[in-house]
Image (cartoon, rainbow, N blue to C red; front, top):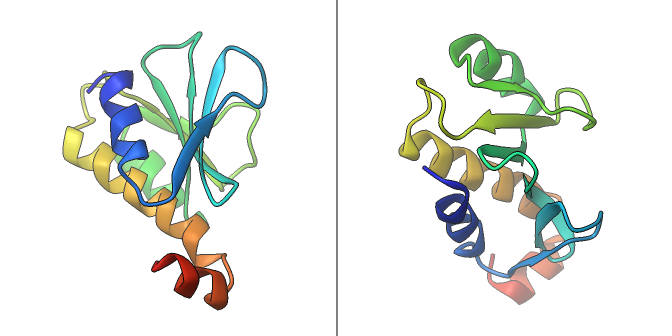
Length: 117
């Protein structure tokens, strides 16, 4: 998978927007203003995703191409080497979905209902 494919997977999620809030070298993907994924453009094979803290240690143990995201909150953000030998497209797609779902789960019930989420 490449960054354009990862970008398109993020944008497929309902009510997702993209922007560059931290400068020209980082694209952030948001659902209702809350970030669930980022693509650091200076590292074109890297994807940063929100992570469930309960799954954090297992993901790092099972995949050498997944690490704690540099400069992000420990146990809540992971970085994935998209071209890593142990990374499949289906794994990336699933982790993007989980990152999105984590953020959606934190929205109010009223807002989720209004958005049909």
